[in-house]
Structures are given as C-alpha cells and as structure tokens.
Length: 220
Image 1 (tube, rainbow, N blue to C red):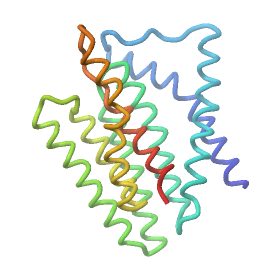
Image 2 (image 1 turned 135 degrees about the vertical axis):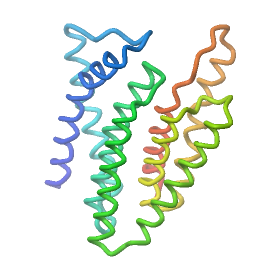
Image 3 (image 1 turned 60 degrees about the horizontal axis):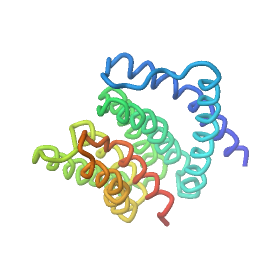
Image 4 (image 1 turned 90 degrees about the vertical axis):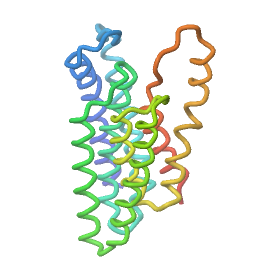
C-alpha cells in the first residue's frame, strides 16, 4: 500500500509539471495555431486537474502491472510511457508533431527499465519479446508512413516502437490490443474530419497512447 501512495505522489508531481512543460514545448516549436497559454484561475484549475488525473492513472498502471515478477521495473517503464506519452499527446494535438527528444528520452528510460527487469529476474525471453514487438509495431507504422496517404508520420513511428516494446513486456495479447485499439478509437474523429469541408491532419499520437493504456487495462 505504501508503494501505491509513492506512485500517486510521483504521478501528482508529474501532473503538476505537465501543463508548463506542454506550454514551453509548444512555444519552443512555434506552432501556428497552437493554443494560448492558460492563465489566471483556469491555469490553477488545469494544474490541479492534471495532478489528480495523472496520479490516478499512475496508481491504475501500478495496480495492473506490479504483481508480475520484477514488477517494480515494469511499473517504472510504464510510468515513463504515461508521463512522456501524455506530454507527447498534448503537444501532438496542438501542433500535429511529436518532438523527437521527448520520444528519445522515453525510449531510453523504457529500454533501461526492461533491460534491468531482465537482468534482475532472469526473464530474458520477456526482453526478447519486447524487442520483437518494438520492431513489429514500429516497422508496421514505418510502412504506413512510407506508403503515404495516411495520418502517420515519423513521430508516430518512433512512438509506436516505444509502445511496442512496453506492450511486448506484458505479452503478445497486449501488443495486439495496443495495435488495434488506436484505429478503433480514431474512427469517430476520422469520420468527422471526412465530413467536414475544412479537412486537416489527424493527430494520431493521442490515439496511440490511449490504445496502449487501454491494452494494459484490458490485459490479463
């Protein structure tokens, strides 16, 4: 129980940091059409809401993953996915771009956690599955990006590879859910954009993250 309180505190701190990190990232990218910074009492409300939401999400992930052997390191990997993913999703929604430095930091953290998990538990097969899933999911999105005519960009390819590795550590069932769910979740917005006379690119990063998190929730 003490561990869950620690996870909740860590999530709350990450939630407090998320809105200003989003504002700085979007401002640094100088994105046209990016949202204005939230000011006044609404800013405090946004920070509080973010802290509560991310804390709850952190505890939910820890609850789903912690009972596996070496679960602490798997929880750490998925918390990195959650925190970096939320920032990436928010930036993608505002700019239609996924900053490579954030994806790279998430990849390094997840990779270190998974290697540490294999070293501590001796479950090298889990690491091999994670690497294979990373290649499968990342390679699949790379083919979509190269084919053109889709909303998938290279940022999505990198994020999909990181999510593939994280899902692969939980098993192939999680990988399959994580591969399918983003498209299911994106259908309503995609249809709405097709029906709109003013079509714009679909930010797919938020759906990638949501699909991966739902795969964790639905997994065994």
